[in-house]
Image (tube, rainbow, N blue to C red; front, top):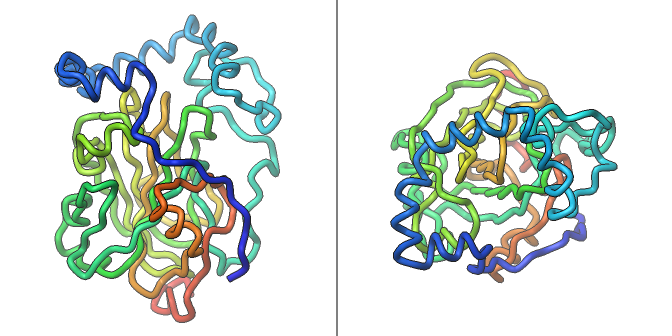
Length: 295
């Protein structure tokens, strides 16, 4: 596989002052019991839909150093209308080679091999795919497969797409709390097991059966997927997150994809790799998707 250059970032347990207080002090952890409740996230979503919230957009852009040249010029009617802003045509080109595995979203990527016990390790926290999916039979289908975690930051594009042509086999929503997805929370809480999330089992043309999961985060209770059944095409927009950063998780079965080794190397070296939606991160393994009705 041809090597590409990617920007990396150290995975640091240091967070903002507020996150440090919340996750590393006793009073902060007491406050968390209230803050992680979905009801508070719904209230924040309501606030961010109001016209007055648009007044915070300019400061947010400056603080997060967002390059607005990638996005369509428009007048934002609320903070959420800005947060879910659309890209200009061609701002995130998708590889035209259908055997290329591309990133479904902007974000910081970490990559993990799923063991023969159906587990993977994130910063000392052991995750069982069964717990993640709440479906033991389905989890068993991904033994020795690959788990990719795309952590979106506030400055990222917050829409995500489908990586291939295919069909939605099933859709599931899992209720939960809403911890931040920043690294500071990973050692204290098994956030990908505890946070509210939803996922779809996808039968894809080139990569076989795969799972695409969206995970809510602190103040990000609204995951907006456009459909829960039917067909989809490569590059089609799947949905969006509203307000804050969050996470997209992808699971692939054994011998389905060859993910670029740089992502595993960086993860082992405690680094996240910065990717953009549509960029190549791997490729199909010969024979993957061979039983798909779309092959």
